[in-house]
Length: 75
Image (tube, rainbow, N blue to C red; front, side, top):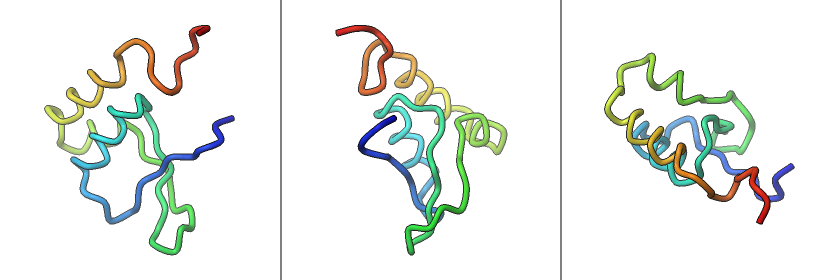
């Protein structure tokens, strides 16, 4: 389990969320409201199905890079 949980807010811009997903190399993020209460989970697939294919491709490219914070390879 991660000690530092990453998330986005329900009013964040989709491009910002995609950038965060790519940078963190994750395909899903918890979604919180501004009171920091969980309101859902957003996935890369959710975004792709709702009309942001180019941006989704860029995020997937970042997610698919080897290594990163959540790498399963031994160091």
